[in-house]
Length: 101
Image (cartoon, rainbow, N blue to C red; front, side, top):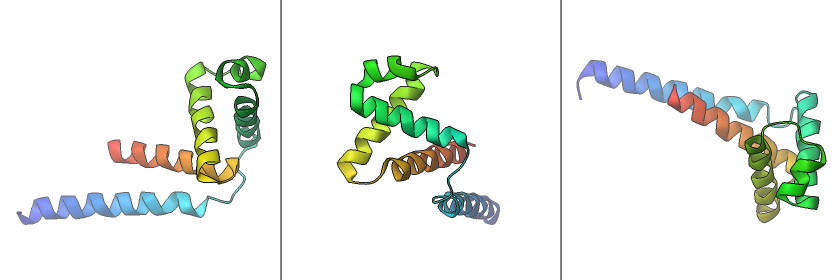
């Protein structure tokens, strides 16, 4: 590996490592009012199912509600709170975005 390629790879690894550490700092912060809305949608999805939960009070596109529904289901399977699952899903989306860029 030539030195320039090594520098680029090291720089990318450093940026990705920094980006991976960043969401951890905000894991327990409550966030904006959107968090309460999303948690409510997640509870409605669990309570009523995917289709009826979306119909109950969701005005976002269906794919957004589906992602929250899947996150809520995973929270139940993993035994974590909806809040932690939501924050973890946001961290995964953030890291995926950083990786693509």
